[in-house]
Length: 196
Image (cartoon, rainbow, N blue to C red; front, side, top):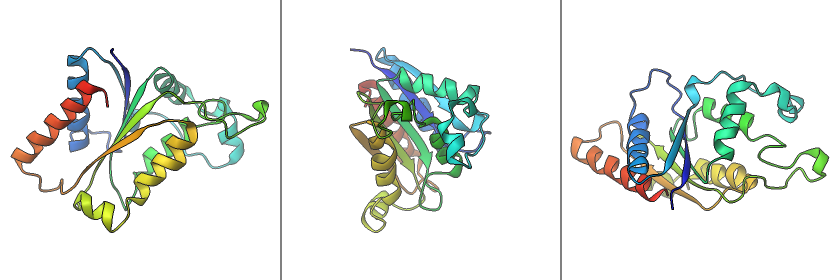
């Protein structure tokens, strides 16, 4: 059965052309080849501000048109794919600011009118997190305990009800060989075909 997939391209460089962009393109190609519906949100191309107060976060009127459109794409999806590079041990600041804007009360979690601000409103959606990094992926898992990945899985996606969440870590990307790049991109096409 075809899935509805929304890809969140979290690389902050608006010029594009990075390995994260090639990964997204390969996933989209595989997904569309299998008849899945795919939408892509390119975070670097959106117009939004950094939230500075709880009042801003609670007020949906401060979201803006790009954030509202992103929320619609997420709401319509049965599967979400987050692709971003590891920067200073975590996701880039622009992606974090985007998630703070999108995952608001009334959309991702219950709002105060419901009396339960922790109710999960994005259930029945799965996700895959794809992270590129300069270090080996196993080293990030073993030595750093994949702390920022676990935080995204548990404290953001899980908090909103999204699950199961799977991950793909792609290490040593700065000097990736042509042969390995081909293998990784084919793996992304395969994940796209399976919509997972």
